[in-house]
Image (cartoon, rainbow over all chains, first blue to last red):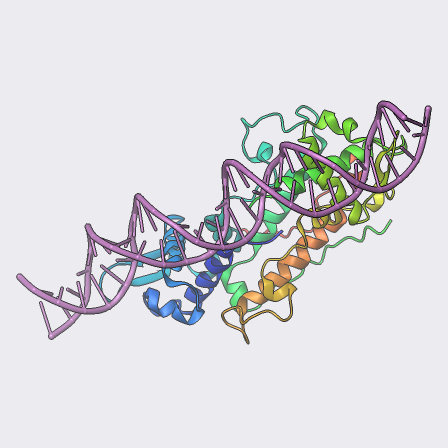
Length: 147
Length: 147
DNA sequence: CGTAAACCCGACAAAAAAGGTCGGGATTTT
DNA sequence: AAAATCCCGACCTTTTTTGTCGGGTTTACG
């Protein structure tokens, strides 16, 4: 149960851009300080662009910049751009999916849906500016369930 | 961002056992109704046993059974047994891990820690009996963030 | 206008992980 | 002893991940 480097690098790149927000386009070389494979990062930035999270300026002096304010970009969007939508079981995401072993009354289905919803909500609550400000609050609702 | 079949099959198997809880050992063949590759499932059940989640009885009339009551087994334990611990970035799980690109003040680290904690808590709250009873309540703390 | 600095893009490839299969061994009941 | 089971490691195939590479396109600037 781990995140791929795509997701990690993608978030690192976005955090980098958030820090430089307002300072004009950041060239690929500028990302050098992150110590990530440059050619690979270029690909990832392409995905982020196609997902509408970054804008690019071509030509000399060009580079990448956030398409929106850091407080309007969530971790959910970034990870989804890099790794596709969160999906615990195909039968949940894709409606025309096979039997999932126990069609009809599959008892696991509820779990997948629940988890997908909760985790997406969680990821959707965290923005780039929250990260810069280390503003990651624990929602104080964790109702104790210890029998 | 998807779960592997290991995680899925593992949970399916555990739900199956939870349903038959109290009915004695369930042989591998009994799992047949789940329509999963038998030889593969056998492997997975081995992992579940080694993780202490199922007990086995060998010999004729043998099979697998839950090692504890369904309300004492969480989805977290099951998924961890199948896929290893949740880990967004190595630097969080493993303390002697390399630079993670921006050692020192890595701003992403807080996110990984936060997410790991939240998701583990979430998964740890769901038990097999919750699943059988479709008792997946939304913790009513989801503070709306829609600006 | 020419050149250099950038991004853009598709093809390729090595390595790792996923997803199984197989054969035989060990245990236990009957 | 035979049959039903689990146990285990070795092996294999396919897919995904994690990149690399080469060349094309766009644009600022002198």
